[in-house]
Amino acid sequence: WEHRQNQGAGFPFQTKAPSASAIMAAASCKPVKALAGDSAIHVKKILNSLASLYQPVAAQMGPMQDHVVDSVASIVSNPQQILDLASGTGNPGIQLAQRFPKAKVTLSDPVENMRQQAEARVADSGVSNIEVINLDLADLSPIGTDTQDAVTISLGLFFAADPAAALVEIKRILKPGGVLVATVWDRTTLLPITEAVMKEVADSAPNNLLHLSNGKIDPLFEEIGLVPTLGHNQVVDLQMNMGRAGEEDTWKICMFPGMATLAQRAESDPDVFARTKTAFERHSAHLVSDGHVKSVWTYRLLAVVKPSTISQSQTDNLATV
Image 1 (tube, one colour):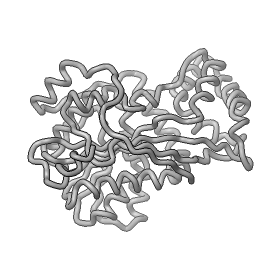
Image 2 (cartoon, helix red, strand yellow):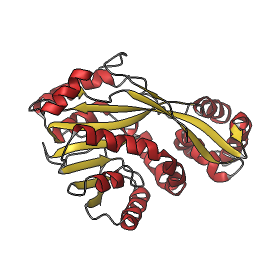
Image 3 (spheres, one colour):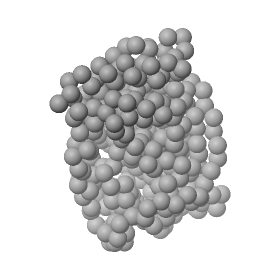
């Protein structure tokens, strides 16, 4: 893998403010349920079907998961409770449990096949301080208020049906001084390809995985009352091998942002997947190297704390932002 890091902090971009209900909920710290729509249900089904394809790609994200764990360690000295949301096949939850053997680490994901893979990988890792549960960003009500020293979300926040409501809930469950460390995609060289293929075969656009990118989420943090801390808005490039060119698994995992739409279209147009594969291979030819499709994915690290009774080390960190 190759990577490039940029330091950054603050609130440089503006986006749509959270709803009034979200801000009121943040003030009251009451549980909020964000109801997922039909599109979110379809995405969950697609994730379930693609779970077996995800791990080979996720395995290349080790440096990003290490970044998340290192960030937690730099902000919270002795966490007792850590919740990893949208854990997928188990990262960075497993690394967190290994780094903090005295902490209770809870891995969570709403997708059954992802949880099954996470449970198998937890068993293989030998760590004993992990629990894997069924939990969706749309409903964190099973988690108690002021209970978590750290919450992590690696590449999952953009799946939230209502990011503002999800952040309100995360603030509720964090202890005062607790930290949220998350990653979101900022950009990828695959995006123009997925957009071109979806336009060609379905006259549609792929799901937007970048709607929280490039600092667009920062106004939500500011409104809800989550404060940037050490490492917030660091940007890193990863060179990813998406699979061997021409193989079925490769085009499917690369076209994931459009798969929910394609699955719906296939109900009345059974040839749409064959056309998608052909179009993808044509549009992605320039990314093929040594027989594999290779793409640059850029992620942004988000690190924010719940204020009130903030430790001196976190106060020092905030002074550097």
